[in-house]
Image (cartoon, rainbow, N blue to C red):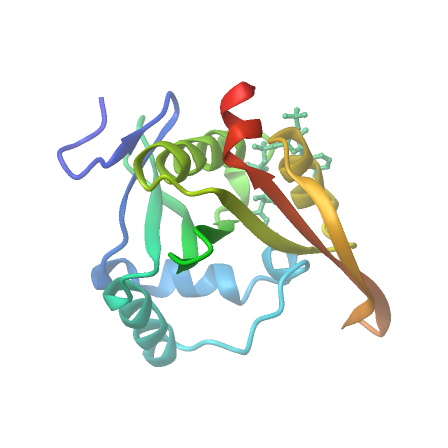
Length: 181
Ligand SMILES: CC(C)(COP(=O)(O)OP(=O)(O)OC[C@H]1O[C@@H](n2cnc3c(N)ncnc32)[C@H](O)[C@@H]1OP(=O)(O)O)[C@@H](O)C(=O)NCCC(=O)NCCS
């Protein structure tokens, strides 16, 4: 069973709202791990600016920022958010990071994304969820396609990683299509 802070409960993980106390050396180590950050642009965090980033997100009414916690041993292994909620166009941007690499490839990102998409479409009544992903982030692209996201466009040779230029894909899923699944 998930603990009392649980907001969204899956089979393997539960999601609860992230707190400032979640910002610690472990969380910071994810953002300094080249393997985790291979497909993400990041601007060099330390504990101070990470705290202020999380504080901004927590206090922003257009962001729903969750910690991903394992149910078996209550470990914080990553984060997921619905960000930049635009109430006029009724859409939000999905972002996910499983920082603890021991938990990759076990279906956890898929479970967490489904929990948040369900929340976005059924509770927040979003019309659409969108995201951006770089061409070199094969695991993330597979994940999003398996969730039903469709590629809507791409920015060509948009990002440089280790001197190689990659496209940036823009992907989206509509509420109707998600609920049909
Ligand atoms: C991308 C990421 C979220 C995937 O998390 P995960 O928990 O390992 O993914 P899952 O186990 O839920 O897999 C989901 C799907 O992606 C596929 N997948 C995951 N990792 C893969 C890999 N390395 N190679 C190929 N496919 C992969 C799975 O096969 C699965 O597809 P299926 O449902 O059709 O079987 C994780 O690697 C991560 O956090 N990376 C660093 C941060 C990041 O890049 N975030 C995305 C930014 S756009």
